[in-house]
Structures are given as structure tokens and as C-alpha cells.
Image (cartoon, rainbow, N blue to C red; front, side):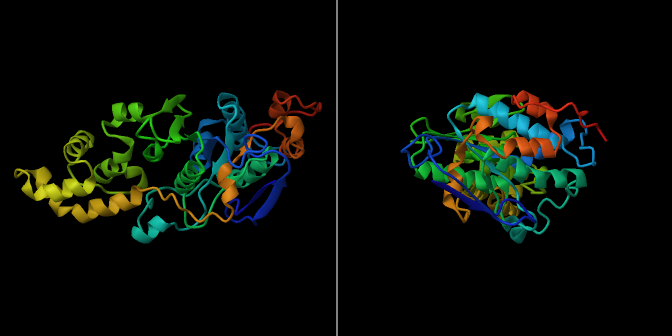
Length: 334
């Protein structure tokens, strides 16, 4: 029996669900051989702004959660035989805010109509019997990293991280000889990001990407890098010296230049940035079994799915999944 218990999402009470029968991949197997972890927070934000507004007759926004459910079905068809889990940010301050109070300070608050759908997402995942990973003080990126580490420790064959966020490219396997293959699937570009694609895009290996971001900085997270160090220079320095600490150690011996002075003057800032962009792969998830995910099952085997779709008037999805639909009118955009 696969037990599932975790803080699902901010402001919600922890729930426990159990499912008898097979393990996530096959009967008699103690852990999944292939795992897909969806960066749920990143996906929901993107869907909210990409899709036209949709709501129930009572005015409950549903467009992003409908998009998420459709995406989940698409991904399950693309990655058949993979177990699935969804990683979500937790409300409130994170470990990174303790290092940098201004972390992500420039970002606008989450729109109210998206926040309400984040809460609905837990119901959707419960209806699909897919576990959600969310822990106070940590971001979805850290949960993805932790799930990948747990699957690797369990000698899984493959882990696919579903995201278009560049930070998670740090997790991609550098060597094809690694016992567990870790890749990122960019669901916007419909592209599987392996080490070769990352090196082509950034001119650094996946394991150097954190050092690269520490020097270049990340404006989207309000992380300052080293002034005057751009992508090409960062990649060149890493090709010459290997990692950030080696670059900083070599800086005093470099020929006099603005680049040399910047590396010396902003060394501590670069080290802080390196800590901020690092992914934490040991989040203390309350139930480690959650990290194994669960196989997507046919709609007929998901007793909570149709009631969920009916409650939120997601009739297009009812029809797609083969459920009989009523003759009531469809939800209208608000």
C-alpha cells in the first residue's frame, strides 16, 4: 500500500490518502523506475496568464486549473509508464529570504483569481490521485530536487522534471553513465533538455549552471550577480577555471581590467548569489513515499474525478475523459 500524507498547499489542512494495490510502477516493485515531477507553481502561473478567463456559474475562476488538468493528461500520454508528482511553493517566507530579505521582492503579489485556483489544484490532484509536494520554508524547485535525489537513491531509471524554469536545469545529469537519468522537459518548447542542449544554450555544463547564474545574476528572483559579467564572460571563466570559487580565487592574478576588479569587489555578493540559486535536495518531506509519485490511472478507476469535474463545471474535460455530460450550459467567461 502506498501511503500519501503531506501538507498539500498553504492554508490547507494536511490530508492522508491511501491506495491499495500496485506500487507506483509495477506490482512487487518498491519504488518507481520512472518519475515525472511537475513544477506546479511555475505551470499554474503560466497557464493563468496564457488562457482566457473561465469561471463557474457561481463565479469561481477555473481557467488555470482546467489548463493544468489538460496538461496533466497530455504529459501522461507523453510519458507513459512514469509515476507523477506535483511540486508546489508554500506560502510565506522561504529559506532564501533568511539569506536575502529582498529575495523576489520586486514581484507582484499573486492575483486573487490565481490564488483561489492554487487551492483548487490540491482537489484536482486528489481527484487524479497524484501526490502534491509542498513544505513550509521551501520552494517547488527544492521539492523537485529532493524528489530527484530520492528517486536517484532508490536507483530509479529516470526522472523527468516538467518545467520551463531555467533554474531546474541544474538537476540534469551531466554524464550519460549516471545510474539515474535526470532530464528536464520544457513543456512550452516541447523539448527534452539533456546536458547537450544545456551546453548549447548556456555554454556550460548543467553542474556549472549554478556558478554561471551566480555571476550573471537573476533579475526575475532579484538576485544580483557580478556587475559587468555577462553570459559569455561567465561561460568563458567557467571553461577556464571550473567553478565559481576557482574563478574568485584566480581573480587577483588576472590582468588588470574592470572584470578583475568586479570579481574581487563583489566576491561575497557572488557567493551569496550561489547559495540563493542552489537547489536544496534534502527537504524534510514528512512522508518520503510521496517522492515516489503515482501512476496515472484510467478515469474509471478514479472515483473522485468525475465529482470534481462536475463541482467545478469542467464539462469539456468530462467529455474528453468519456464521462456522460449533462445538457446544462457550459461555464462562461467572466
